[in-house]
Amino acid sequence: GAVVSQHPSWVICKSGTSVKIECRSLDFQATTMFWYRQFPKQSLMLMATSNEGSKATYEQGVEKDKFLINHASLTLSTLTVTSAHPEDSSFYICSVLRSSTDTQYFGPGTRLTVL
Amino acid sequence: AQKITQTQPGMFVQEKEAVTLDCTYDTSDPSYGLFWYKQPSSGEMIFLIYQGSYDQQNATEGRYSLNFQKARKSANLVISASQLGDSAMYFCAMRDGPGTASKLTFGTGTRLQVTL
Image (cartoon, rainbow over all chains, first blue to last red):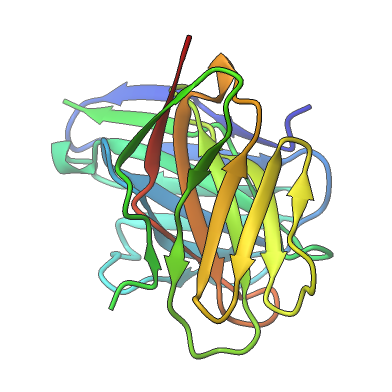
């Protein structure tokens, strides 16, 4: 069965609005989750590392004020795309780190379209 | 320099045949891990197999095996007895930092098409 869930699976919003994406670890507690984005026909690019109980660590070039990450519990991390614009349209995927094997398990992804 | 290189943008294989997807990597860290993920058209990334840099034997998981050649810095994925459901994008990834802060770097992927 699924190890990681994401909600919503797809969302369409108007430019200027904010969108929240949830990532849940279903099988185990995770102190570390990751957020990626993937443009069509391209590879995954890491956006940030989400740490339970502390601030997220963002990759170079990723605006922390635009992509707000909250990892409030050991099973839930959220990514909020604030004031979304059409260039934010992408496939956003989260992953959960299983510490015992140092393996990341991915959610099914969220397709965001900003009109 | 690219950390993970997948030189095959697309591959075709006939059903029931074996196929090798290439992956080379670059790191100076003696401790690292190599992963292969499958991404079908639905978008989900499915973990397939893992190889640690200190593992003496090549990893195997069912029909998947990893041909790990450390000196050549290659970690090719071998899929035996291909099935139509194997058609997907395949990504090689590397973790080259210790501990839970380790991040994955992905290659550009190989699209595998299994034909009848």
